[in-house]
Length: 205
Image (cartoon, rainbow, N blue to C red; front, side, top):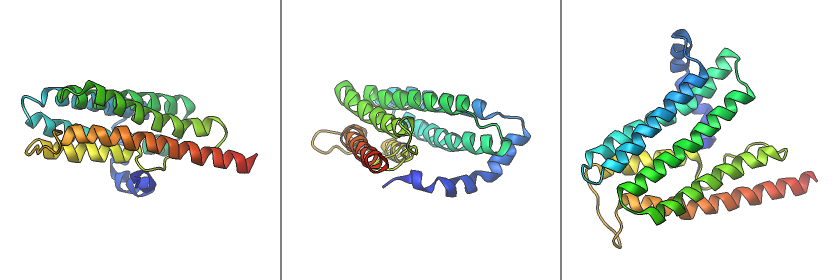
């Protein structure tokens, strides 16, 4: 399972918005910063959501906008011919900070800091292994059980539903279970990407 495999399809769907962004003079870096701002708002909304569940809906909408803009910045850079290592670096740094803000916000909102720590390490290691493969001469790895697009989709869906219903299973609500998934499946995805990279390096070596 990984929505990252459908990046080319998403790029085609976003094409009208890419054209609009180019016409109004937005730069890819500006889009990256705006995307990060939506992640910050979502993280803050999730912290507030325990006492006022409708904040979860605000967070879900902001996560959807973050995900869409995260695709838009790269497509805009290709359209304008301004893709560069500096822009790629900025995009990835802001994505990692966005991941931190979202997962920490979710964890604080349900008072599960330990679970949040396990989840955020799984998320960050997944992303690290994806880019580290590129650092050692391979293609960047987007695959695995749970890529960034999958995480954003799950966060948006689960928190959108949590705004209205929050059933508990074994003492954990839907947001806490989402953190469990990120902790367990995130680390499994990191190991999966490591295995893929080591296999490719062995073949190439």
